[in-house]
Length: 74
Image (cartoon, rainbow, N blue to C red; front, side, top):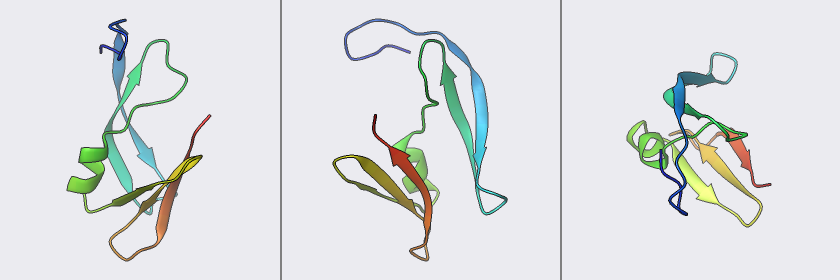
């Protein structure tokens, strides 16, 4: 994994994010040195989710328009 400033981070593995059995997002990457897992926005769209970005967070909706996840910006 290469960051925007060309520093590299080691991929430690892939996992699953789950929301109380409502959905599973597979192949979420865990990268050494990061405080959070990486989710591909393209992967979310491919699975039928809609992602809306706001200044301090993003909202991930399912196909029915229900909020599934809130990603907070720190």
